[in-house]
Amino acid sequence: MSKATQSSAPASTYDPGSLPIGDKLRAIAIDGPVASGKGTIGRRLAQSLGFAYLDTGSLYRGLGAIAMEQGLDLKNENAISDLAARCSAQAFQRDDLRKEAVGEAASVVAAMPQARQALVAFQRRFAEAPPEGCRGVVLDGRDIGTVILPDAALKLFVTANEEARAMRRFQELQNRGDSATYARVLSDLKDRDERDRTRATAPLKPAEDAILLDTSEMDADQAFKRAFDLASQTFGA
Ligand code: CDP
Image 1: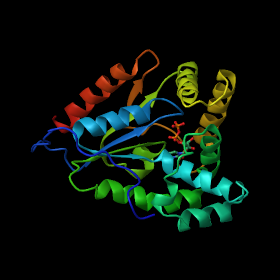
Image 2: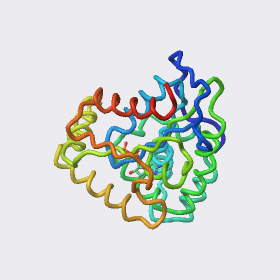
Image 3: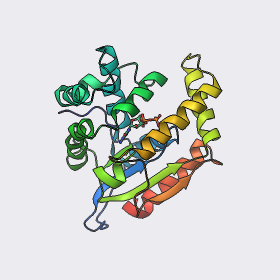
């Protein structure tokens, strides 16, 4: 795990200025359950603020996809952890990451403490030394505010009710030409949330100082605006 998987080039003239953010990291940690919209919010925040963006779910998805491709038993913790330690971040950049089966595999391997451990250093390095020209970072995932970046200056926990999230994911899959049904998407989403919430290591939960953003009744623009206002208050944009 050595190089950045992705980053958004700074696209604005946003100047962080000299406003203090105390001893906090110039970072936005976004966590939330399946299809809560955290990726869309994260990408747009990074773009607007000139921050780098890392979708940490893509690391777990990459690991799950490679494990499936190699025919590994997804329950074999030693084999999966070895794979995680051997893979470079580039290996996780694949075209099949957004498939439902890959999300499912990701959540199985993500419950393994040693596999997670192999990915921690990469995520922290990304935040502490963002790609050149970026003024901060946005990371989204499940444990960013609680485990990866407990010192992030802004933590958001993005959620929405299950039906709204399942409908968004269903539409996303349809747009990709995937034939999944809404009922299947809803049931997979419930299973994955349950697994992510109840695992012993780095479970999905809001950090104590996270701000809750319930987007059930919001469209993407409204959710982004609310997040951007919070970021502006934090970073002085
Ligand atoms: O986009 P979606 O909400 O469906 O999921 P994702 O963010 O791509 O994450 C896929 C899976 O990776 C999750 O269900 C988690 O099990 C795992 N994950 C994790 O454990 N920790 C993270 N920081 C990010 C993802």
